[in-house]
Every structure is written in C-alpha cells, then in structure tokens.
Image (cartoon, rainbow, N blue to C red; front, side, top):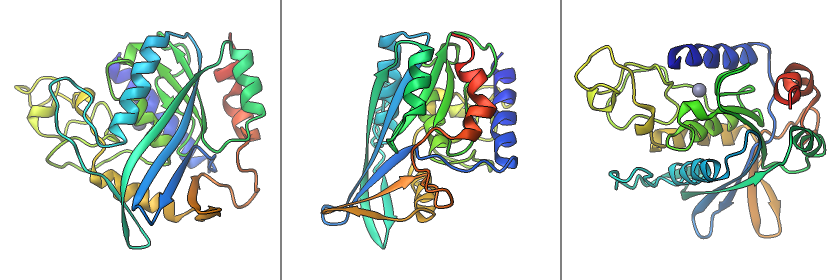
Amino acid sequence: MKNRSFLFSVAFVMLSVFSGGKAFATARIILNFKDETATIRANFNFFGEIREDDLKKATDTAQKLWSGLPYLENDHEVIPLELIVRGYHLKVKAELQMNILPSVAAAKEHAMKNQSPMNNYIRVEQTNKEFASATGSLGANAIHILYQDDLAGSTTLAHEFGHSMQLDHIQQAFTGIPRIMIERSFPAVEQKYKYNPEDPNSTINPRLRRVTQADMYDLASVIKKWPIEKEGDVEYVDIGWNTATKDKFLFREKMKRSFAEKWFGND
Ligand SMILES: [Zn+2]
C-alpha cells in the first residue's frame, strides 16, 4: 500500500509540474535582517475527516521540523537552520497555525474567498479514495493527506508542506540525516535510517526525515524567485506570489478545474 501510495504521489506531482502549474501563495517568510531571523508562517486549514488531536500533533511536528527541532522522543538533535538572504545568515523558525473547517462546503467557501498568502487547504481522510498523500502541484496551496500514512506520528505533513513551498523531491543518494523532501520509497540512504537496517533493499523510514540545512539552501533558491516586500519595518516574501496575474492569494481557476472535484467533490 505504501509503495502504491508513493507512485500515485509522484505521478501526481510530476503531472502538475509538466502541465505548467503556476504557483499559489502558500507561506510568508518574514525576513528580519536586524535580528537576523527568518520566520516561516503558514496556516493549515484542515477539512474532511477531522481528528483534532492527530491534526494538532501533525501540525506541531511540522512546526518543530521546519524549526530544526526534533519531534521523536528518542531524538534530541537540534539542527540549526539558516536562510541566507542578501548575504545575511538568518536563523530559521516556523510558526504554523491549524484551523479546522467544519465541512467540505465550508472549506470550499473559505478557499474561494481566500485573501491570505499563508492559507493551505488540507483534505484529510483515513484511507486513499482518490489520491495518496499529495500536494496539488509544487507551490500549490491544496494538499491531500491520509491518516493511513501515519499522519499524527510522522513527517508526512512537513513533507507535503515542503512541496507547497515549491520544494521538489531529493533524487541523489547521500549520507547523514535523511532530508525531509526524500520520497517514501527512496532506498539510497544509510542503512540505519531504513525501515529494516539489516536489509539493503529496505527503504527509508519516513519518521526519521528531518529538515536540514540543505533544505534551507533549496528554500533560499525558491525565495529568490519572489520579490521581497515591505510593510513598515517588516520585510517578507510570499512564496507563490503570481507576478503574471497579480492574483496573489485566491484559490485559482486552474485548481478549481483540475482538483476541486476531487478535493471538494464528495463531502
Ligand atoms: Zn513528495
């Protein structure tokens, strides 16, 4: 099931990339050059099958991971993360909020009126009906996620949020802590990070993924694509700002056509 889910996931992301998916705003990165901090802000609007405790845990985990903090009881390793912007080394933390939308109809209404660059719409279900855990396209603000992928106990939400911030999968083998954007069936990590450390064919244990400095280099590349805006003393980048249409924060037509029936179709 895991492998099948994974294939769906890849096909889904790839399809969206090749269909020329433009970006949606999905997160605001506050850049404070005085304090040398960068704060990743986003809202997760959950709808579908709601289990509040699980969703809270998943959100907390995503916030910890994107702040470089461990989330597993036996992992105490803090990974200092910095975003290098304009030559400044900004210390990174994430502030991720969760919001429960009571019905699919309410979620649809919220999305259609969305004016915030930080809103992501996350449909949650127990098992796979239409899609595996997936993000609409790189940079999309619509995510689909399954409890069967160990949502509460794992790094799935943090991974999908990475896609939402336009980060793609890591393809090359490497040593050290597995990066958050590694796919579930990826085999080329050190044995100790696999489901079965004794088996060379075993795949990565996704619970052991962490956001690392390498992911920050990738995120810094994403940030370069968008303008740094200023409001008073605050400077920020809205990831996914669409310069072509100026349609900053709406749940866009393309998304409505391509995915709404799947995301919002069945209550
Ligand atoms: Zn992925």
